[in-house]
Length: 275
Image (cartoon, rainbow, N blue to C red):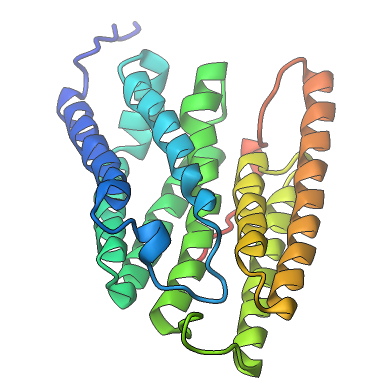
C-alpha cells in the first residue's frame, strides 16, 4: 500500500530550508550592497579573479531557489528532505558565515570556513550523484545541476581564500619566485580538477568543469601585470575549456544514445573535493 504524499510532510525542515536560503541569499547581497564592495576593495592577490567571476553566485542562487520550491513536490521531497536532509541548511549557515567573514576581510577565518563549506558541499554532492539518479528534468535542474556547479565553485573559493589568508598583497608586494610557483601550482590544481570532472565518467560532470573554467578565465583577465601568471592562467584556461568541450561532447553522444540529457552519470560520480 503506497503512502499518500502531502506537501506538509517534513514541513519543519522545509521551513528551515526557506529561512536559511534567505540568510544565504542575504549574505551574498550584503557583499554587493555594503558601503565598500568587497569584489573591488578586497585583498588583491596574484590569483584574484576579475569581479565578474562571482556572477556564478547568481546562477547558484537561482537554481537553489528552484531547489527550495521543488522540495514541496514528491520527487523533490525524496531527495532534498529525506536524503540531503539537514545537510542543506547546515551548508547555508556555513556559507553565510564564510561570506560575511570574507566581506569583513577576516581572511584566515574565511579560509577555515571555506573548507567547512567545501566539506558540506562534497557530502551533499556525493549523496546526490551516487545514490539519487536524475529521473526528470526537474531533478536535473534543481538538484543535480546546482550542487555540481556549487561543488566546482567551492573548490575555486578554497584556492582563492588560502592566497588571501597567507599570500602576498599584489598591490604592495611584487611576485617573487615562490609566489609564481605557488600560483602556478594552484592554477594547475584547478585545471587538473576540471580534467578529473571531465574524465570521471564518459560525459563527465559538465557544470563543475564549467565553474572552474569560468574562474580560470577570470583569473587570466585580472592578472595582466605579471606575465608568467597571466599567460599561465590563459594556458590552463584553454586546457580546462578542452575538458569542458570533452564533457559537452560526451553529454551529446550519451543524450543521442539514451534519448535524454543527463549532465553526469550518477552510478560513477566523482569524489572531487578541495579538502
